[in-house]
Amino acid sequence: MKYKLHFVKTRLGKMYYRLFTFFKILGNYPYITFESYNETTIEPSVTIKSFKFNKNFLRIKLRRNVYINNYVLLQGSGIIEVGENTYIGSYSIIGSNDSVKIGKNVMIAQSVSIRDTDHNFSSIDMPMIQQGIVTSPIIINDDVWIGYGAVITKGVTIGNGAIIAANAVVTKDVPPYSIMGGVPAKVIKTRTGNIED
Image 1 (tube, rainbow, N blue to C red):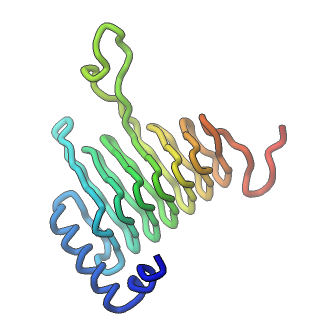
Image 2: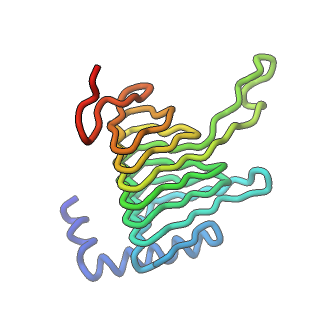
């Protein structure tokens, strides 16, 4: 790990990642657009899968200085927008058939799942695999920290400056500057003081 961090900071390392990012973006055109190629890093083992749904295809919009780590999966037929200075950790999955909008200065740890889609299960007379999907947009505002293994479900908005604890399952909106934890997640504290019982 120390060697990798040292390599990334060297001139050769920067050139390698810039070149790889360029070919990754070129190879996934027209799915990806970006503000600044020189300030974007997509590591070699990132996977991008576009699904065709309702005649749509996946669109990924990257702002300045986005870092997408190895083994991240970006998939779907919707829009994934990532704000500037945002980091996405290894083994995370972002799935969109509607839209996932991530703000700036967001830290997403490893193995996080962010999906704006669920399978429909309203009928018990038909297999769930045949019932289609239900979607609702996800919005993650600026300066959010999402801990290891957290799950963000469809229709959720996470307010500015919020923290999502490791392994939390977020099923409802998160107030700004709050700390959410648990399954399902609830506010356990705020960044301005403790929550009273």
